Length: 430
Image (cartoon, rainbow, N blue to C red; front, top):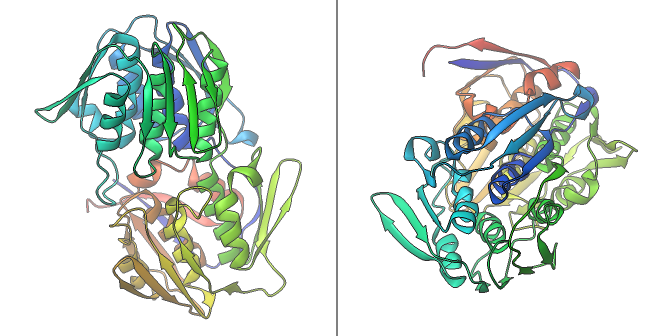
């Protein structure tokens, strides 16, 4: 097992390439199951979750070839996924338990093969995330659903229909959107999630021959087609990674050019909050420059996590780390997941002054944090501890970094190239 070691207090400055978005790349990879022809994805990040899903796709019959890309566009890769024949319509527990996004093979398998057997998913332990919305939506467009022995068994010919989500769900929107592309009729998805990753998926599906309207709105209209065809598509930049590194620039008094196409558009919810907290952003022909404003201090604010275009829950932990150094106090309310303050005790080990009351955390700003050994509990909590370590006085050791490897491509190399004193080292089992 490895740990990340950080000597804090070094200003970050330079160009930092933003990788392809994990949360966009995973459903795009699943979309490759919808066609007998190939789907080529550019800007695919090197991440543990990508490898996990690739292994699952291989299990189902996909053949995947890779080609490396350049550092200046995130150091990602191009993957060509060809699934001429689906050799198994079962996604087993041993593979699905590692990552919640594996449930996204359910829609494509069901649509193409008329059946799918998928284990109930795993992922970060950040709260209850039932898949009831997925299953009800599949029933609404003609599927028969059975839960047995920890597996979802879906079957039937998809005929289309109207799906109305009682609450917004990114995963359920993605799953039903993919399945609807091959349904025999028209599917209307109401109260659909509007995250940029949904738009990315819809545009890729259209490049494959799908008929979708209402992209970017809460009402998607999908006219089913008999088959989809080969396509090439470039994964959008990771808006959460970009927001995380913007926070790093502010916390170290630095200036980072975040390199990625269309970052101002996809970062809408994060940019609003970060600007209120005192950051300024300057658009360049390659992305955004992030730095603190003339006041030179992080400003205490109130923030509430909300579905897009609101402030994303995936940025909550990083914002909290930044607010530990604010001028004044901040109040952060988490409305998406009920167990997403697990980073608080670890930040407090570094001297942070944070009080949690239910779904609300009050953060009182300090002049400095102190380095300490800390333990990551989930993906975004991991990044909050790295941010705190970058700004802290002394040495910080972040343990259980396998969480980070799920969502931040080459983090040590990227930060090191911008002036951070950061390394990966062997750690005792914890």
